[in-house]
Image 1 (spheres, rainbow, N blue to C red):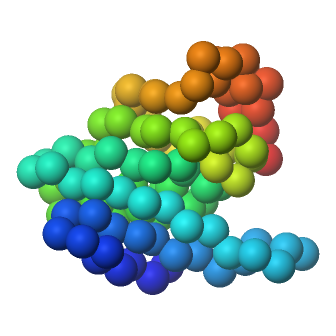
Image 2: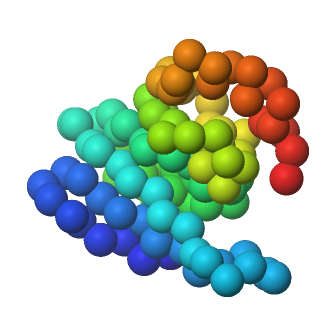
Image 3: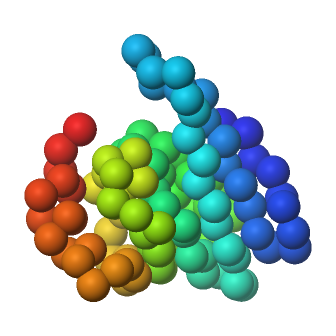
Length: 102
């Protein structure tokens, strides 16, 4: 995982491609004090690594925004607990279908 601060308190987390894929994954996090808002979650292992990284800094992910509902954007919700989710009007339908699935 590579961490880049894009702007003050706004971070990009960069991950290599998974096996048999060509493209890597990016997560974005906006930090405000000890709370963080995550934009998309990639896959479970990605969001778990970001969660653990932030936990070491005393920062908790409290909110997730989904830009859209492909698995590589929402599956990481499986690694997060007690977060508020923001998405389009149909986000709950997509989560019901895809969360807890690889």
